[in-house]
Image 1: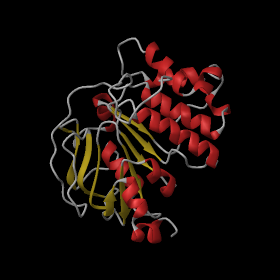
Image 2: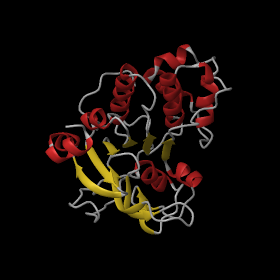
Image 3: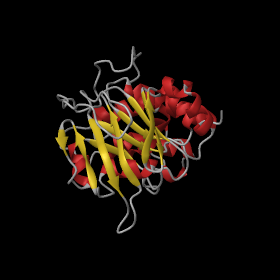
Length: 272
């Protein structure tokens, strides 16, 4: 992971499982056609809510392709984290589907989705604070039966501070370092897709920039990254694809650059 990287989406896929991608066509619910022919992951026209409550998602569609960073943004209460939970199987869908690498996984539990190749980092409670950094990373490899020491070295190359603090309790680290542990543990599963729910919540702007740099580096290995982010402007600046949600539905979809240049998006969601 410490080598120099070229354009995003290169063929170095050392932290991913690899495999052929599914063929997915355009999907409704976004207001425009979506190129998902090579998507590893798509939450297609998702509708659902919590328990017996009302729907929070209304035909929401999000997708990410190999080597891409796809970012979900929107106002508070827009359903961003709910969409992420639905893709990961923590929220049963009342309509729509989720497909990973061409396979319909709508009926699978979150645990089964991890085994299929989904690496998920929740916003909170995403580390074991009493365990050391190294023990946290080892816990991430629980689904594997092969030698994971090479992956751990890749994580340490990506986050050098974690190697320095590998024998320290994770709960003693700074907020940004704890987020690095959480992301590193997800990478230890050798995922097909990495999902991050508010990875920069509560960290300083300097730490946010550093985390975004590492996320770019992860995507450049070919790993798809789907991310919910509260810092919309900064997230869209690194995004290959952006989804603006409003009241659980797609309001705007485009590249990060397109959304940043859209006057309505800037005025309504980015502060002008």
